Image (cartoon, rainbow, N blue to C red; front, side):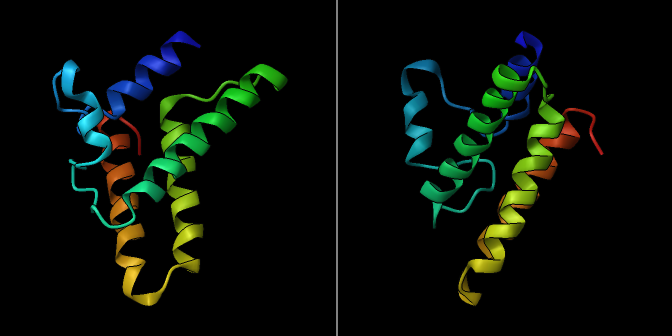
Length: 109
């Protein structure tokens, strides 16, 4: 499971560009192409997928790699997109693009 978390953080490297004392700033000032609109929903989506992966690992002993986690985030973003107002659908598209870029950084397809 250690390699899972290391891969997950490496995949988020493009997003997490601030030095350690200021790492919380990224929660309020998104980077890496993630739109600031609905950023709290983006954070909730990622946290929800991490929580589900953790529970699956603990309760079922089924382990997900970072590439699978990012694919799960993309699928969830696509589901959420269907429920967004038409004027906000571009936000979910940007999330999906971000997750795909992170997957490519891991060597995923």
